[in-house]
Length: 303
Length: 294
Image (cartoon, rainbow over all chains, first blue to last red):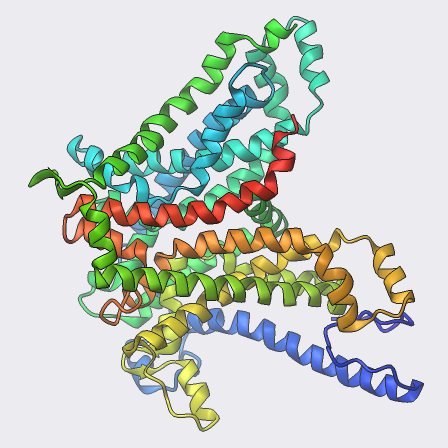
C-alpha cells in the first residue's frame, strides 16, 4: 500500500484541518496522517472481509460448536459434511441447477432480442423510432410489482407455474429495457458510414446486422450479459412469486426457505449454503472483476 | 440508399419479436394493473368495481402509511449514506491511495455482486446466531457495552438493514464516483494547487463542483433502488418484528399473495411506481442531452 510522499504539494486532502506550518512540523504531521490513513484503510478492508471469513469458518462448524464455542472461534476441523448436507438435504444442489436453467436462456433471449431491437432503432432510419425507443426505456423505471399480479394470473391459469418458463419469460422482458438502452448507445458509437458502405455494396440490413453489427458489439454484449447475469441470478421477487413448487425454487428462494427443509435452523448447513453462493460469486469475480466493475457502473449511470 | 437503411422488412424482423414480447409481458400487464386499482377481489372470488376506494383506503390504512413511511425513511437514509460514503471512499482512492488503490477498490466492491438474500442471512447471523451472540455483540461486549437484541425491535432491525446495505453497496458507489473523479483534468487540480488551494479547500471549491453531475446520477440511481427495497428486509427479519420494517414492496406482496386482494395490491404497486417515476424523471433530465443527439 504505497502512499506517495514525493510531491511538494501533497494531495492528502482527506483531512479537513490542514495547517500550513514550517517544514519540520509538516513532516511530523504528514507521518501522523499517513498512519491514520493506513489504519483507516486496513480497518475498511477488515470490515469488508471479516464477515465473509467468519461465514466460511462457520460453514465447517458443527451445531454444537455454534452453541458452545465463542462465536469467533475457528472450527475444530475442516470437514465438508455441512456442504454435503446443504446440497442434498437442503436441496441447494437442485436450486443451483434451476438457477442455471433459468439464467442461461433468459440472458440468451434478452440479448438476442435486445441487440436486434437496438440495431433496428439506432442504425435503421424510419419515422417513430425515437418514440419506440422511449417506450422501451420508460420500462426501466417501472418496478416489478407493477406487472406481478396480471402475470401471476396468466401464468397460473395457463399452468405455466409448474415449469420454469414464467421466470425465463419475465426475466427476458424485464432485462429488455436496459439492454435496448445500452445497446443503442453502443451502436451510436459506431460510425454510420460502415453500414452505409455495406448498403452501397449491396448488403441487406439484416445481413449487415449479423456480419457487421453483432461482431462489432462483442464487447458490449459481454458487458450487458454480466450486468444482467447479476440481476437475474440475484433476483428474489420474481422467483418467489412465479414458482409454486419447491422443486422449481431458484437458489435465492432456496436460501430464503432453507431452514424449512430441516424443520429447525441448522447453522452449519445454512452457513455452507450461503458460502456456496458467496464462493461461486468470488470465483467469477476473481476472473472478471475489471469487466464487472466497469459494466455495473455503466449499467447504472445510463439506466 | 435510404430505402435500404429504412428497409421495412428488416425493421419488422429485427424489432418485431422484442416489441411483441415487451408489449405482452410489460405494457399490457402495466395497463392491466392500472385497471385493477379500481377493483377489489381476486380471480377466485371475482372482482367488484369500487372506483377510487382503493386510494382512499390506502391513505386511511395505518399499515400502508407505516409501509410508506418506512420506505421513505429507508430510501432517504440509504441514498444519502450510500452516496456520501461512496464519495468519501472515491476521494480516498484518488487523493490518498492514488495508483495503489486498485486492490482496495476491488476488495470493497466485491460484496456488490453477492445475492441480497445471502448477505441478509449472513448479517442476521452476524448480529445474532439464534439465541447466541453473533460477532457484533461479542465485539460490543469486548468494549464493555452490553449485548443488544437487534431483531426484537424495529429500530434495531432498521439499523442492521442500513449497515448491511452500506456494507454491500459502498464499494459500488465508490467505483462509480471514482470514475467521475478521474475525469477531472489534472491541470485543473494543479493550477488550483498553485493558487494555494489544498486539502479540504481543494475538494470543496474544485473537486465537488466538477463531480456534481456524477453525484447527481448516483443519488437518483440510489434513491430509485432503495425505494424498491424488498430482499433485504425479507431476508433479514421477514419485515418484522410485527411489520415494523415492512416497506411498500413487501406490503404489496403480502396484500396480494397472503390476503388475495389483487386490486388493493395493485394500488400499492401504483403508488410505488409513481414514487419511482418522480425520481426517475430527473435521470431523463440529466441524460437527455446525449439521448436526443442522433
